[in-house]
Image (cartoon, rainbow, N blue to C red; front, side):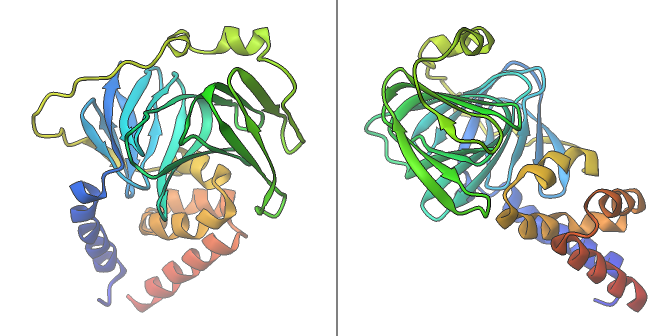
Length: 282
């Protein structure tokens, strides 16, 4: 293909079969109080209950609280204004919590591989516990309601540092890049802020046996839509994300915003160079 516009068009077409492929499902959006923003591929969608979830999905619950079923043999609920990114790393399902509240109920006897939640440099293995995680994008709090909860703290270089484990009714917090404080039970502020539904076991949601709804496409993403991903995901994921959203560089406003906010980073400078080189060849 000689023209960049054709390349971009064909790239989009190649993504279509994979976007909603059932074999790639991680779980399903089982319950949603209201519309849920879903970024998949290079587009923003509005998702509803019953929507299958895929690796690479970015979910913003907005005003709604949602529940996800079948994610690595666990049941997961979010609070309002919660942003999370789903991925699969080997045999582990990864949930990157960018901001907000998560409650995870690992369901005994259900095989689904490991479930790992990452929040601002704190990695938590949720495979054998009932737990709550909260982050505002800087500070992180973790509460183990039942079971055992191994925590791993990433070092400044992104390598796993020291580890510790929480047991039933134990609580830990980490402020910024500081040490983890795991002394004692959760304070009153944590309990008062936690969504009230998290105090009870998460109920099973009966899903109707009908074709899964296809999320309604709203538009192609803007830099504002994906800025939380591009600024908060681990460095190791940045190359894949820059490549994923590179087709949007054909939009002048997207390109200008990327250049302003993320220009100078190796990942985006590489994609900007490729775009400019292909544009010259048109």
